Image 1 (cartoon, rainbow, N blue to C red):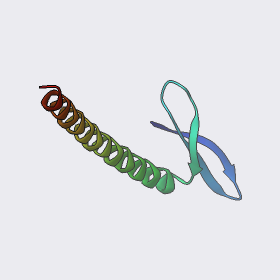
Image 2 (spheres, one colour):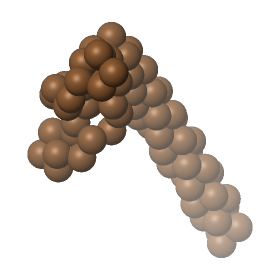
Image 3 (cartoon, rainbow, N blue to C red):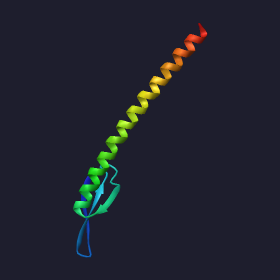
Image 4 (tube, rainbow, N blue to C red):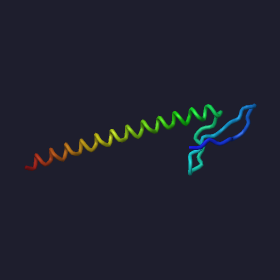
Length: 75
């Protein structure tokens, strides 16, 4: 993510938080607001990655249990 100057509005310098590559603006605000947005966004992304890993591990465990149960029934 990158912070770019957008404009001066009512005496305030406004910036945009832009996603790299796509150039899609995610947030517009003062410099401090943009920095805070980036911190919160990165923290949220890290939590989502951790949650996804946990759910993937749980799904893999459930599949292994189901396969073991099927193997036990067919014997």
